[in-house]
Image (cartoon, rainbow, N blue to C red; front, side, top):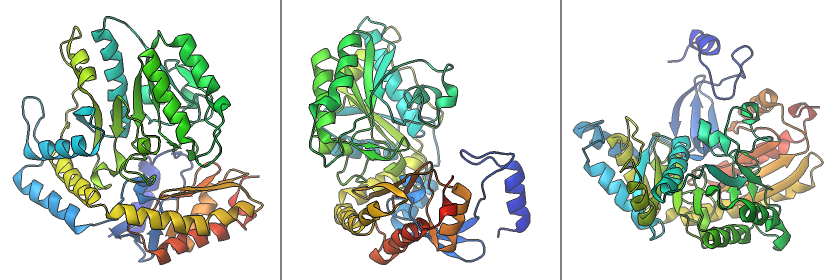
Length: 430
């Protein structure tokens, strides 16, 4: 039961993501979720186009995930991971090793996507300590996004991201120009020149390259050419640099491949996973690396990797994740994502011609409308709710990342709402 008093308390006391406490954006009370539907307290149902920030790939209240949670809960909800292991962690780690590239053998289970990035960056730093060097610089891409914790923020775009506020507080790293060749464009070698220049000039100081493969997510929802990623891998090999792939947003099928690195046929030295790992049911992340990296870290002065979250390897989260990955391994997502991609191409790409639209783009189960003007978040959100859909725009981006099991009818309801929203000048800032 959700009362008006609850909503008022929420507004007065609860801090929501990227929202002012003095003048918060409206919040819509959700009391239940099933499949692709969110139910509001007043009984209205919304088609979810966000997968709860790209995580709920199987939809909501899935019986297999619920059963996995209940079975694990009956055994134990949590046990410390220091000096103890348990079946759920072993089962999940087996699946991760089996479905990721052969070279990635060692699994570190963490709490969230941002922490997976922190872990990856610490792995890279400690790797070089194990080799007798003190390297502290990372090379990354402008327009990138890697999370909200401090090390992760330091490799987000320092000027054009939500973390530009923290410039001067964070370590300064190297930022190559964002790729300009789109996923389906003709490749131009000049697109890689800035990255190559920085790598050549600074490779003796660089601990690792970190990037989002193929899809730059919250930094702009941009899709870049696979050849760029191939050249990054080649340059890392040339200079002996580690490559960290942040697949937190793209992992488990979202881009049309199981992992976005597959579009380029490359294997990273360190892989970050999260979001869809548990099917969006619980928070969990994983950072995988090679035996060579793990062994080198273990030869450092500390003799071990210096990181250990309290809730590392939480049995409930591991059990749900293991079931989610079993569902992914069955392969139905491939047909589902292909169907979503085809429908988004038919229904979103024609909006490229709309005067409010700068670009429309689609890849896998991701559809993006980039507008000329920033959106009026509150007005546009209200419009979408009134149209029976849940779409959370930001900046100049109105995008869809629906659960894979969405029906064609429900997906059309989302795309129609976007199409109609573009016709209202009040949905955009002047």
